[in-house]
Image (cartoon, rainbow, N blue to C red):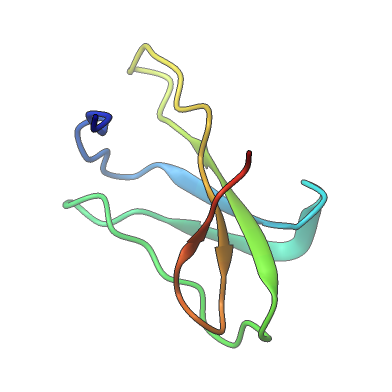
Amino acid sequence: SSTALPAPVANASIQLLDSNGAALEGRTTTTTSTGEFRFDDVRPGNYRVKGIVPRALVGSYSGLPEYNTTTGRAIENN
């Protein structure tokens, strides 16, 4: 079965977190009009991202996956 993803959100803040969920200082970006975001100069490893949607939007974007920056693939959290 597949899980429907939420619609893209423009101008949302995205924080880069370490694999334990702690925010990395100075590692925040904003989504584009199509909901895309990018972090430059990230060392290989496992990271999480935390989306902070604009106040005008209601909803929760929990359960974001952890990513391996070497493979670019989401890590299964079983």
